[in-house]
Length: 473
Image (tube, rainbow, N blue to C red):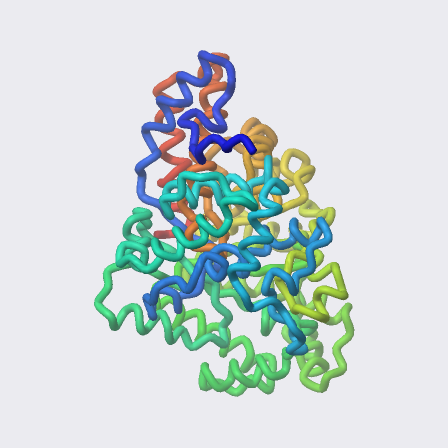
């Protein structure tokens, strides 16, 4: 068999093939390629940095936690059990991590052209020092090389954090979380800045599995009686204050739709009481969740925390996978989303107040130019989050810029955030975003829409200052 070329990262990757634009893109990218990383929204576990233990092995690090990766393998008929994904019922899943890695090597061609493939390639070259392509033939050699690399002191989580030049990293935490690992990090004397973000979904959505138990836990951690709606609100406000003491600057809500409604306290209390009696119906949950988005906006005006909303995902679409393996196993699917009508109550009450910093995300791309850009281009409180999840990719980022910029400009966005669970992928994700922004701005300069000095300012803002400002870092 002919030997494969070495694994390499082309210096002009993601730039236009147009010679003039490529030259400008190189210049713009050089301005930001070494700018510190701001990671204001993501799902990396604080425990990683509190314990600061070596990563177990390549499979545990790169395969098992990454639903981007194993969902595509599953789509090709590869069982999740064979990839080591644990089953809820305790049924058998592969435990030999070398076998799992071999499966990935045998099938790595499936990731050609995908962001997952691009991120893994970047990680292997720049983080793990791999210079061979991952194939069935090279899988074991690469596994052993990475395993050895992960044992070196410079590849401990805290050392990686510093090597990645991360200025701040935000985790995402439930109001019932005690933030013990955040406390451990603070007490350790390490200077890395890891902060929590307040995500109340597990207590604001009646339909969340274990909602009643979560309400009990909320009472325990807050010291506030949550048997009534007024106590529930007081407990949330107390927990937000605690999160801020621990460094939090933002909140987040993951909702099916961005539906908002302002209920009276009496009506909200009636719905809450029904839920406490296990009598709430899905429509009750929809109304209460819509009301709680309004309440989170009110609280953000009072305590100054940036408010994020991530709507438009049908979670756990594949019932079989959800029942066997649980949530976050690659079965979440985008859905069409209405922002204009759903957000009207919220924006009419709070959208004209520039003290509120509301960041709205979408994975319904058609809504960018039709709804979100016009809304953000008008209401002072509203900003639009970067291309997210399925569109955190080369083409998705380009589409985002083309759909948003003419109506909302660059400054009604918030720069970039990586929104990842896979810690070693963070530099790769930021690098893609910076390269795509350089490419887009280069096109505007080449076509004389922007002057070069304007593009030079914009790319630094996109890479750093917009996130710093909007997430109040």
